[in-house]
Every structure is written in C-alpha cells, then in structure tokens.
Image (cartoon, rainbow, N blue to C red; front, side, top):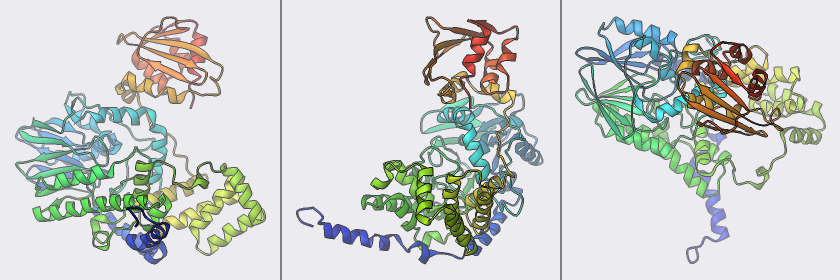
Length: 573
C-alpha cells in the first residue's frame, strides 16, 4: 500500500486469496448427494402430526399443514396465533384444539401476511366478530398477494412446495410436511381488525397478558408474541429448524438479512424458556433457547458479512454463491441444515439487495437475446444435432446440471421439441432424487411434470367471500399491471367508476398503453359505470362476466354498454 492506495499487484494477490477466506470450492466441498436426500427424508420426523403442550395453556399444532397454529388458553377464553393456509387445514386444527378446551375464541393474531398463516382464519372466527391483531404493514402485504402478484407467486409456490407431487417425490417442505393449499381448497380469508405501527403493542385477551413485538425478519411485518409470565416466545418465522429462507425461490421482495439477524438477537435477549416457532417443533430450556438463537443469529450475520466482504473485493454473485460457506461449527447444527433456505440463494439475494441485478461484468450488461445466443452456441457446436448429442451424453454421464443447461439452449431454438422436453424432465428428476433441499427438490420434480405435460399449476380458487374482503384500493392498484399494451396502444379514453353502495369514485385513464388510476371522479369521462362494489370486485377478479354483469338492473352505464365492455377488455392477462 502506498499512501493508502492498493497497488495493482496487491489487489490481484488479495483476490487470489479470497477463496481461502471463504472456504473450499464446490468440488472440494461436495457431499454425497444420496446422503443429502436421505437426510431430508429423515427430517420428516420433525413434522409428526400432533398437538404439543409447550407449557400450561400453550399448545402448538404441528404437522397439519405447512405452518403451525398456536393455542393460548386463558381464564375465560383462548387466543389463536396463526390460522393455517386453508379452510381445510384449519378445520383439522380447530377440531384438535377443541379436544383440549371448549373455551370461546377471544382473539386471533397474525404473525405476518404469508398465506400459510392467515387463510384459515374464518374457520376459527366463524361468523362472529373476533378481533384479529397484526402489524399495520400486514394490511398492505395482504392486499398485494391477493391482487398484484397472486398468479405468479401461486405458480412458483406450487412448484416449491411440491403441492401436486406424489408421496415419495415430495419428502416434505423443509419447514412443514406439505402445503394444504391449491386450486381446490378454500381460502377462509379475514382481514386484521386491530393493527399497530410502533415497536410493541400490549394486549390483554382471554385473561392473558401478551406483548406483540415488531421484529422484521422473513417479512417486514413480522411480529412475535411474548408471554412474560410464562417466558414463552412465539417467534413466528424468524426461527425454524433449518437454515432460514433469506431468499425464497417462489419470489419475494428483498429480505433485509441484517435486520433479520438483529431481530433474532432481540428475541434472544428476552430470555425465553420456551421458543415456539410457527414451523417445526418448540425448543425448551432457557440455556438451549439462548444458544440456538445465538447460532441462528450468527449464521445469518456471517452470510451477510462475508457476502459484503466479497462484494467489496469485486466478486460477482456467481463467484460469491460458490465460495461463501457457513463455518463448520454452524453448518453441522441440525437447525442450520439447508432443508429450506440455502446459503447460495441467500448470497445472491444479499448481492441483489445491495447492488441490484448487474454483476459488474460488461458482457452481461446488454446480453444477446436467448434465442440468438442459442443459435450462436449451436453454430459453434456444429449444429443443433451436436447440442442434442452433448445433452444426451451428459445425461448418460450423470452430468444433470449440464444437461439442463444444454436443454435450455435447445428449447430456445425450438420450444416445442418433445424429445428435448423429455430429456429435460429426466434431468430434472435425476437432480431432484439426489437433492437435500426441500424447495429445490420439489421445484425440480414439479417442473419435470410440466415438461412432460402432466402438470399445469393453474390458479388459486377465488370465492365470492374472498373477493368481497379485498378493499377497492387494492383492486385498482392491480389494474395497471393488467392493461394489455398492444390492445391499448392507440387508445386514449377515461372511465369513471361510481360505487353505489359505498359512495366512492375511481378513475382509470388509458393513455396509449398506460393506465393512470386515481380515487377521484374525472371532469369529462367517456364512460361512467355506476355499480355495487362487490360486483365490480368480481368482474376485476374474473369471477363475473362484464357483459352479463352490466345487464343487471343495479348497474348503470353512461356512454354505452358496448364501450364499457370494450374498455374492460383492454385489461387482459
């Protein structure tokens, strides 16, 4: 170093030493893949179906679905923390809880917005008004997942959780035995009625003194439930028995892993005797809870810090994913095995969170389109036939990832090539059978079925009851992303919506491929649709046909029914 500046030679030396700082290479660190698959199968014992008594009045229902539901029994009633992923899953838990106590439900708590924690709420509440507590951020997140990104996250979640796989293909889901949510199950959706915006909220329900503490981690709205009198901490998804999903392959907003690590440390400092996760089994004993949380915190912190360290040394996401490894004293812990999250996925997420999608290599700044790249690779190889020969050779040699990458080029050249699709499916199945991470295993098997034409994930079942609980602002927030730019490229028009039951008014102005939406009534609309809010929600959710709905007597159209229908048809898939 001269005057605080690294010389070129010193920088090269440091970069060469980076692998030593991060651990062994992929080849050197390879574990017998058959052993990893066996370990995942053995992990299923974690989800033995039963209601576990954690402490007096505290019960955790495990193995009924992807998540756990927690029963807190008080003097004159009960509180339910998280309500499962569907009405069907919740009904089985409710029946099990009724064997413990017949005391009435006094409150429900949502630890966060994820579907496996909220979509069974109506089974527990029934038609009675029961307060549902959550952080205020939960409302916005629920609106997003039920409207804006519902379709893509549903498809990817079905793959990741192996929802349509047969037993034996899906060993488990890493944090639960299965996800009881698909296109045939029912969402018993209820929105939170009591929210808080600060760090803590004290709650007295059923004679229980509870503290709801906002501790962002897997989600920004994550809250934990602290029972000071019993030293019980319901820790939501900030801890479960697996390396955490610092990134999820079903797709999510950026998860701030440094904030997550700090939240785990704050949990540890509460001094809990019983740690009750909303996935996997409880941990009891003050000393055990303390060191488990300390290890969990350290693992998250380590991956974050070493990723940032590598970033500052010029490593890209692919290099970082290969070299950042947990130290042995953490990697060997059963609650940090990669059943659910992985270090490699986490590293890529951290890179993206700090620097975005660009890895720093100019060759990837404006890459060739996929088909053109495939054409050039095929030409280099000597034609499509040579690529296919290499893909088959790789399959026979057990080089399954290389087979998949060859198939990617071949399908870019010919998406309908059935021989390539069959080869791709075989490679996916081979990877899945040797995979120790539940998410990856399930995704591989599910995509294999799709390649074979045996599976089409479809869409979640949206009922009238669910639709009516989604607020109008959430419905309109999703409309812009539904506008078909080709159909609307030459269209400039304004539609006004008057809601006869709520008195609200909204405007959608289409301007050549863009929809500008605001909660006002425009000066000179081209079309005015006066309609009950529920009917409009059903049209927007595609559970009602616009032309048929507009023929109803309680709908009034100004500007022509045909024009109104044509306007709505601009908003396709």
